[in-house]
Amino acid sequence: MSDRDLETLFTLEEIARFCAVEREWVIHHRDEGLLPDPFTPAVLIRARRMRQLERDFDAVPELAALFADLLEELDALRAQHRKRG
Image (cartoon, rainbow, N blue to C red; front, top):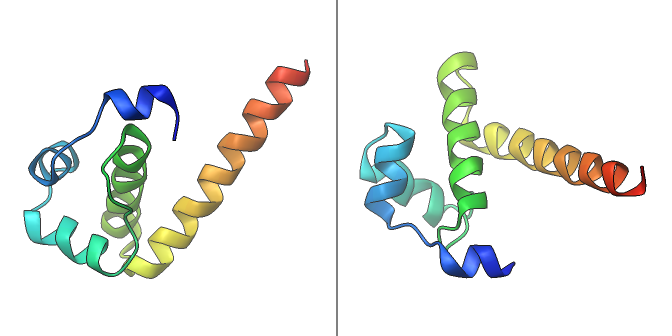
């Protein structure tokens, strides 16, 4: 966890509001291990991606989480590539 993540933590209610979902959606995904706790900015991005995939493609939560994992890995690889020039 970076220093920035330690500075900004979101509540369950904030994650739900920012993702335009019910609290129960966040609770279910957290309890299933699809959204880690504490709710950092990275978790917010993950939750928004997952919600979009579930909504736009009618993806089951587990598939949306797997795709979010792949997108996170792609973001990390792109960041490494930028650092190397």
